[in-house]
Length: 554
Image (cartoon, rainbow, N blue to C red; front, side):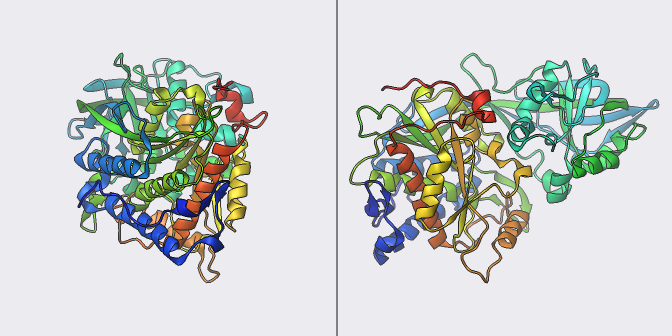
C-alpha cells in the first residue's frame, strides 16, 4: 500500500463558495460520490491492520504520519512543522514491570498484598526506574481546592507526608465548566502535591464504575506505556516528583481500603451518585506502593500544514484544526484480535480534517486568516502532542485565534444533529450554529455533561493556553426515524470504543460523514473570514482562568 498516495476525485472544496460551503442541492452526484470515496480512502489507510493501531512512537504511527504529510502536500498546504510537515515531540517513556511492582495494605500489624489488575492498576514514573512510598492515607473527597467557589476538600486536613485517596470527578454542585476543569487528572495531581501529599489513589466515581466494568479497564494495564513530553531542559510536563505513589483501585479493593473508616466505600459511592457532599476523613492503616519500570526516550511527530490567509491584515492570525493520529497500538487480544485499529477513534477524525483542509484550500478565494491543520500524537496518553504544540507552537501562540478539534466522530445513521462542545464558552458557538443551520441539522447541547468531554480531547490543550476552542462531533439524533441513534451510539461505546473491534468492520454512514465534513468546513470558513477573531464570552470560566489579550498583526 502506498501510504503517501493522494486521494483522487472532485474535492468538497470544488463546491465551496467564497463565503463557505454550497448547499446540499448544489452538489453533483459525482462530487458527492467523490466526497464519500475520499473519506473512505483515508480511513482505509489509517485504520488498516498494517499500521498496527498507530501507537505513538511506533512504525505504524510513523507510516500514518507520512500518509498525512503526503495528503497535506497534495492538497497544497505549506509545511508548518519544524522539519517540513513534522514537529518532532520528545517523549519520556516508561513501561511498568508488573512482576516487580506491588501494593500492600498495612493494618492491625498485618500486611495484605493487593493483586495487580484485580485490585489495582497504575502507570509508572517516566523519570525514575523505581519509586516507593509507605504512608498513612486520608480520603479527601474529590481532592479539589477551588477558592473561587469557596470549596476546599483539603480544609482542616493535614495531608503532608500522606497518601491522599480521591474520587474521580468533581463536586456535582459545581457549575459544569469548573467541574470539567477540576476533573482533569493533572489539576488534581498538582493540588495534591501542593498540599504536601506523597501519593495519590484514585477511586472511580459512581458514573464511571457503572459505565465501564473494572475488568475492561484493567485489560490493557501494563501493556500501554506511560508517557510525558519533555522540555529542552529535561523537565517532563505535568510531572510532580513529590508524588511517589499513584495508583487506581478497583471497587473491591476500595471497599477493603475503607474498612474501619467513619464511612464505607459503598456509602461514599452512594453519596457521589446522589450528588451529595462527600465526607473527608483519615483511613485506617497505611498503604505501601512500590512501582518499577523500564525507562526510555523516543521522538514521534505531530504533523502540521498551513493554508496561508489571503488578507494581508489578517493572515498572521491563525485558526488551527486538530485531530489525533495515534491510537492504542497492539494490546490484549479480544476475541483473537490484538490490533486496536481506532477506525472511528480517530482515523475518522483525521479523515474529516483532511477533507476540511481540501475544502478550504479549493475555494475560489483563500480564507482571509491562515488555517493550520495539525495531526497530533500522544492524545491517548494524555493529550501530549497537542499540549506540546500549544507550548511550542510553530506560529506564535498569541496569533492562534481558535482551535477546532475532531475526535471519535461516529457515523452510524443519517446525520440530524451535531454537538459543538465549548460552543457556549466563546463566540465560536455562533459559527457552529450557522453552519448547522446551513446544512439542515440541529446544534445540540452537551448531552452528557457528567463526562466532561470538553477537557478530554486535544482542544483543551489550547484552552489552557487561552485559545477559544470547539470540539465538533456528530450527535445522537438520527435522520432516519426508524433508527434509535442514541441506542446505536451507546452500543458502539459499550462494545467497541477502545477495543480491537473499532476497526474497518464497523458500519459507516458515509453520507453522514460527508455532511459533517461540509458543516465543519463551513465553521472554519466563517471563523477564518470573519472581521473579528473569536472571543471568550464575558465572565466565562475558561476565559477568566486562561484567556488573555492576544497580540495580532493588525
